[in-house]
Length: 256
Image (cartoon, rainbow, N blue to C red; front, side):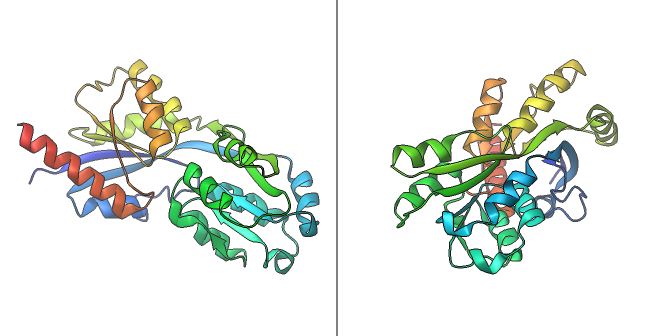
C-alpha cells in the first residue's frame, strides 16, 4: 500500500504534537502519515463575569460545555465545584466530557456528539432554571436557539475569542515541503476551514486532487462554502474519523 499524507488542522492545545495526537495515531494504522498544524489560538474573555455566575449555582439548572475550551474557561473560574456537582453538566462530545470530569462534574449527553443533538437531549430533561452556556465568539447559536424555542432559558456568555495562528503560513509550507504528496486536509472546526482554505489558494496549493475530511456536519458545511466536498466522521472520535477516511479511500479505489 502506498503511504498517504495528511495535514490535520487543529486548534491550540488540541494535541498539537503529531506523535501524541490521537487522530494522527488512528490514521497511522491506515498508513496515513499525518502532521498536525495549529490553526488557531484562543484568548479568554469575560472571566470575571463567568466567575460571578459560577458563584451562584442556585440560579441555574446546570452548565452546557460546548467545547474543551469552554471547560478550560470554567476551570479557571470555578471555586466551588461541589456546589455544581448535583446540577446538569451537559457536554458536546467525548473529549469535552472527559475534561468536564476533570473538573469534578458528571457530564451528560456527550454521546450525542454534536450541538444540535445535545440540545434535543437537553429538551428531554427536567429543567426548571436557566442553563449557563459559556461559548466562543465564533460559536453558532444552534444550541441556544433550539433550547429557547423549546421554552428553556439560556444564559449565554462569550468566554473566549478565536484568532488565527500568526505562523500558520510558515507551518503549512514546512509540511508541504516535507511531504512528497498531499492527499488529505482534515478539519476540526469551521474557523479552521476559514483560516486555511483561502490561504492555501493564495499559496498556490493545488486542491483539486486533495480529499477533505471533517469532524462533523458544521465543519463539512464550512468546507462546502469554500468549494470542498468532505467525508465526515459519524462521531467526533479518532476511530470514527479513521473509519470515515477508510471508507473514502475504498470508494476512490473502486472508481479507479
